[in-house]
Length: 195
Image (cartoon, rainbow, N blue to C red; front, side, top):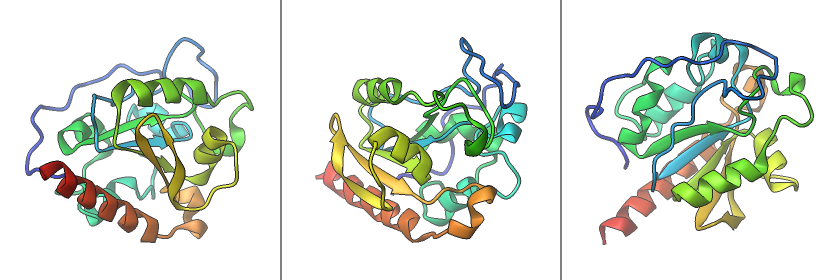
Protein backbone atom coordinates (compact mmCIF):
# COMPACT_ATOMS: atom_id res chain seq x y z
CA UNK A 1 0.00 0.00 0.00
CA UNK A 2 1.01 3.60 -0.42
CA UNK A 3 1.50 4.81 3.11
CA UNK A 4 4.30 5.91 5.30
CA UNK A 5 4.28 6.83 8.96
CA UNK A 6 5.30 10.47 8.66
CA UNK A 7 5.13 13.03 5.86
CA UNK A 8 8.51 14.23 4.56
CA UNK A 9 7.73 17.92 4.93
CA UNK A 10 5.71 20.24 7.11
CA UNK A 11 2.40 21.73 6.01
CA UNK A 12 2.88 24.79 3.89
CA UNK A 13 0.57 27.74 4.39
CA UNK A 14 -1.07 28.68 1.15
CA UNK A 15 -2.66 31.87 -0.09
CA UNK A 16 -5.78 30.90 -1.97
CA UNK A 17 -8.78 32.77 -3.23
CA UNK A 18 -11.68 32.69 -0.82
CA UNK A 19 -14.34 33.61 -3.32
CA UNK A 20 -17.18 31.14 -3.40
CA UNK A 21 -19.64 30.35 -6.13
CA UNK A 22 -17.93 32.98 -8.28
CA UNK A 23 -15.65 32.77 -11.28
CA UNK A 24 -12.13 34.04 -10.62
CA UNK A 25 -10.83 33.49 -14.16
CA UNK A 26 -7.15 34.04 -13.33
CA UNK A 27 -7.03 32.48 -9.86
CA UNK A 28 -7.28 28.85 -8.85
CA UNK A 29 -9.56 28.40 -5.86
CA UNK A 30 -7.25 25.65 -4.53
CA UNK A 31 -3.77 24.82 -5.80
CA UNK A 32 -3.15 21.54 -7.59
CA UNK A 33 -1.25 18.99 -5.54
CA UNK A 34 0.50 17.14 -8.36
CA UNK A 35 4.00 15.77 -8.76
CA UNK A 36 5.27 13.36 -11.42
CA UNK A 37 4.42 9.66 -11.20
CA UNK A 38 1.80 9.70 -8.43
CA UNK A 39 -0.02 6.47 -7.78
CA UNK A 40 -3.43 8.20 -7.66
CA UNK A 41 -4.47 11.68 -8.73
CA UNK A 42 -7.90 12.44 -7.27
CA UNK A 43 -10.06 14.84 -9.26
CA UNK A 44 -13.20 16.44 -7.89
CA UNK A 45 -15.70 18.77 -9.55
CA UNK A 46 -14.75 22.04 -7.84
CA UNK A 47 -13.87 23.25 -4.36
CA UNK A 48 -16.89 23.41 -2.09
CA UNK A 49 -17.81 26.74 -0.57
CA UNK A 50 -16.35 25.63 2.78
CA UNK A 51 -13.14 24.34 1.15
CA UNK A 52 -12.72 27.65 -0.68
CA UNK A 53 -13.20 29.59 2.54
CA UNK A 54 -10.71 27.44 4.46
CA UNK A 55 -8.24 27.04 1.59
CA UNK A 56 -8.21 23.23 1.92
CA UNK A 57 -9.58 20.34 -0.13
CA UNK A 58 -12.59 18.37 1.16
CA UNK A 59 -13.03 20.60 4.22
CA UNK A 60 -16.83 20.62 4.29
CA UNK A 61 -18.56 19.15 7.32
CA UNK A 62 -19.48 15.55 6.72
CA UNK A 63 -17.16 15.07 3.74
CA UNK A 64 -15.85 11.50 3.85
CA UNK A 65 -12.69 12.01 1.76
CA UNK A 66 -10.09 12.09 4.54
CA UNK A 67 -11.64 9.29 6.63
CA UNK A 68 -12.04 6.95 3.63
CA UNK A 69 -8.42 7.44 2.57
CA UNK A 70 -7.36 6.17 5.98
CA UNK A 71 -10.03 3.45 6.11
CA UNK A 72 -8.80 1.95 2.82
CA UNK A 73 -5.18 2.33 4.00
CA UNK A 74 -3.98 4.87 1.46
CA UNK A 75 -2.89 7.08 4.37
CA UNK A 76 -1.57 5.88 7.78
CA UNK A 77 -4.07 8.04 9.70
CA UNK A 78 -6.99 10.33 9.00
CA UNK A 79 -5.40 13.51 7.74
CA UNK A 80 -6.94 16.92 8.42
CA UNK A 81 -8.05 18.92 5.37
CA UNK A 82 -5.32 21.46 6.16
CA UNK A 83 -2.73 18.70 5.59
CA UNK A 84 -3.63 18.25 1.93
CA UNK A 85 -0.16 19.30 0.74
CA UNK A 86 1.26 16.13 2.38
CA UNK A 87 -0.58 13.77 0.02
CA UNK A 88 2.33 13.34 -2.43
CA UNK A 89 4.26 11.76 0.46
CA UNK A 90 1.75 8.90 0.16
CA UNK A 91 1.77 8.78 -3.65
CA UNK A 92 -1.48 10.75 -3.90
CA UNK A 93 -2.44 14.07 -5.47
CA UNK A 94 -5.40 16.42 -5.85
CA UNK A 95 -7.00 18.62 -8.47
CA UNK A 96 -10.47 19.70 -9.59
CA UNK A 97 -12.01 19.76 -13.03
CA UNK A 98 -13.24 23.32 -12.38
CA UNK A 99 -10.33 25.31 -10.93
CA UNK A 100 -11.65 28.89 -10.97
CA UNK A 101 -15.07 28.44 -9.35
CA UNK A 102 -16.36 26.97 -6.11
CA UNK A 103 -19.66 25.75 -4.75
CA UNK A 104 -22.03 22.84 -5.18
CA UNK A 105 -22.02 21.08 -8.56
CA UNK A 106 -25.55 22.35 -9.21
CA UNK A 107 -24.40 25.97 -8.84
CA UNK A 108 -21.42 25.80 -11.19
CA UNK A 109 -21.60 27.60 -14.56
CA UNK A 110 -21.97 25.32 -17.57
CA UNK A 111 -18.52 26.19 -18.86
CA UNK A 112 -16.73 25.72 -15.51
CA UNK A 113 -15.13 22.38 -16.34
CA UNK A 114 -11.86 22.23 -18.25
CA UNK A 115 -11.31 18.64 -19.46
CA UNK A 116 -8.51 19.71 -21.83
CA UNK A 117 -6.50 21.20 -18.96
CA UNK A 118 -6.94 18.02 -16.91
CA UNK A 119 -5.81 15.91 -19.87
CA UNK A 120 -2.65 18.03 -20.17
CA UNK A 121 -1.92 17.63 -16.45
CA UNK A 122 -2.39 13.85 -16.57
CA UNK A 123 -0.16 13.46 -19.64
CA UNK A 124 2.52 15.72 -18.14
CA UNK A 125 2.58 14.21 -14.61
CA UNK A 126 1.72 10.56 -15.48
CA UNK A 127 -0.23 9.35 -12.44
CA UNK A 128 -0.88 5.62 -12.55
CA UNK A 129 -4.56 6.24 -11.80
CA UNK A 130 -6.78 9.27 -12.38
CA UNK A 131 -9.59 8.80 -9.83
CA UNK A 132 -12.70 10.94 -10.06
CA UNK A 133 -14.39 11.74 -6.77
CA UNK A 134 -17.94 11.52 -8.07
CA UNK A 135 -19.71 10.80 -11.32
CA UNK A 136 -20.28 14.47 -12.20
CA UNK A 137 -16.64 15.33 -12.96
CA UNK A 138 -16.12 11.92 -14.59
CA UNK A 139 -19.07 12.47 -16.96
CA UNK A 140 -17.86 15.97 -17.80
CA UNK A 141 -14.39 14.60 -18.59
CA UNK A 142 -15.28 11.36 -20.38
CA UNK A 143 -18.45 12.66 -22.04
CA UNK A 144 -20.42 9.42 -21.71
CA UNK A 145 -22.50 7.63 -19.07
CA UNK A 146 -20.43 6.40 -16.13
CA UNK A 147 -20.41 3.42 -13.84
CA UNK A 148 -18.27 3.25 -10.71
CA UNK A 149 -14.92 1.54 -10.91
CA UNK A 150 -12.18 1.13 -13.48
CA UNK A 151 -13.06 2.63 -16.87
CA UNK A 152 -12.14 1.02 -20.21
CA UNK A 153 -10.25 4.03 -21.55
CA UNK A 154 -6.95 5.60 -20.55
CA UNK A 155 -5.72 9.17 -20.49
CA UNK A 156 -2.15 8.98 -21.69
CA UNK A 157 -0.91 5.91 -19.81
CA UNK A 158 -3.13 6.59 -16.77
CA UNK A 159 -6.01 4.33 -15.80
CA UNK A 160 -9.29 6.08 -15.02
CA UNK A 161 -11.32 5.13 -11.96
CA UNK A 162 -14.68 6.59 -10.87
CA UNK A 163 -15.63 6.72 -7.19
CA UNK A 164 -18.79 7.69 -5.32
CA UNK A 165 -18.58 11.31 -4.21
CA UNK A 166 -17.42 11.85 -0.64
CA UNK A 167 -19.47 15.05 -0.35
CA UNK A 168 -22.07 15.17 2.42
CA UNK A 169 -24.50 16.42 -0.25
CA UNK A 170 -24.14 13.06 -2.05
CA UNK A 171 -24.61 10.98 1.12
CA UNK A 172 -27.58 9.04 -0.28
CA UNK A 173 -25.32 7.65 -3.06
CA UNK A 174 -22.45 6.71 -0.74
CA UNK A 175 -20.89 3.29 -1.18
CA UNK A 176 -17.41 2.53 0.13
CA UNK A 177 -17.11 -0.55 -2.14
CA UNK A 178 -15.56 1.27 -5.13
CA UNK A 179 -13.13 3.00 -2.75
CA UNK A 180 -11.98 -0.41 -1.52
CA UNK A 181 -11.70 -1.59 -5.13
CA UNK A 182 -9.42 1.39 -5.77
CA UNK A 183 -7.25 0.37 -2.81
CA UNK A 184 -6.90 -3.15 -4.26
CA UNK A 185 -5.85 -1.66 -7.60
CA UNK A 186 -3.29 0.50 -5.78
CA UNK A 187 -1.97 -2.56 -3.94
CA UNK A 188 -1.66 -4.45 -7.24
CA UNK A 189 0.19 -1.48 -8.73
CA UNK A 190 2.57 -1.42 -5.75
CA UNK A 191 3.31 -5.14 -6.19
CA UNK A 192 3.96 -4.70 -9.91
CA UNK A 193 6.34 -1.80 -9.36
CA UNK A 194 8.31 -3.81 -6.78
CA UNK A 195 8.95 -6.55 -9.31
